[in-house]
Image (tube, rainbow, N blue to C red; front, side, top):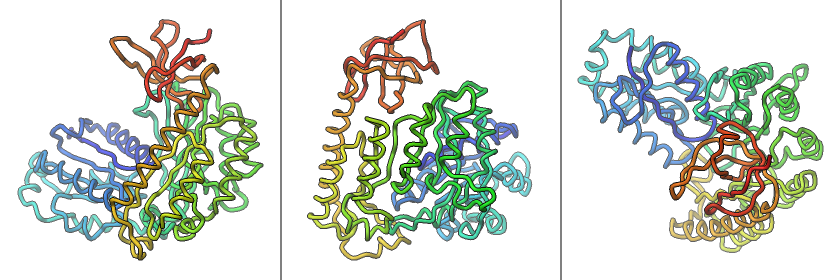
Length: 460
């Protein structure tokens, strides 16, 4: 049977999908090998969120063809969906599969390979390089993602992370932020049937997974596309997952501030399995910049939602994303954003320099900033991030943390167990026969093993 090497680029949803694709190929008898080894087939699950992501996708596809010119190189996902013309003209790409067809990867591959001669077919195909994508097949493997209401049903049976499982519960986005191409790559909001989600979570729980992370392209929109008689919300789904035996921790992917109502905050606070760790998307703390971004909230509302979570949880870990150097962002606007982020005092702030993405409204805006200016602003924000992260972690010293052990870790010749607390603080404990990987233990935080890694004694 042929060997297959897979490589993933992009978000957690992409990571989930490539694990399912690998699982499907293994069930069909394909041999999975590392991407840097010679393989018969290379599959790249691509990303298109920025022009840089497009370039990285092309680089990985070209690297695969250089590794083995006789191999079948398959481009899958978002770059295929938005860059069809470039994909068709790229001689390194033999087969392209868009979003909402990933579930059919194995059958599409089989159909393609049946059209080639056995044994020497792939090599012969490479010797005649330059044909590009098989146009007839390509037309059937890239659908019009903007006009489908079908959720692409995929189920994960096992995950590479042996202690934490990411569960994809929705796809698509209806927001159309001016900097973002994702609604065109992923289509409109499509939510996964709740019974399908619960079936997958139960299966993973039976295999020993104790923590699940609910994720999606726009997680807060889960259920908005369901008809009234089948109405579900993210809160109702979380409550249902909470009832599954074996699952001890539920973590949420990125949320929009609008979903954090009192009903939602108090609802999840009443569920002890939900981790007090919330990533609330911000992008800018300046209202004028938020307006140009077409974000659906303003800084005052955002602050209220953070205060609400702190009211019901006490001291949850709040994390966020911030874009610096958005078109027309003046020094005054940047300072407003900086001061706002500083005032919220996030645990972690993920800083992104604005990256112009062709096909978005922001790419055509006047007032594009220089890379040097974006770098200066980014460095200033990153310095703040480290200060706030350290402050939050120090606030945990003397407290007991509930830690899911994930792996062994060696430092200065000593072996530790390393995992994350419910707040997602990285925590190390001395290796012991009393506990091991995938155990959840209590640790009294005493000091830092190194920067951003807490340590202390396990509490019996």
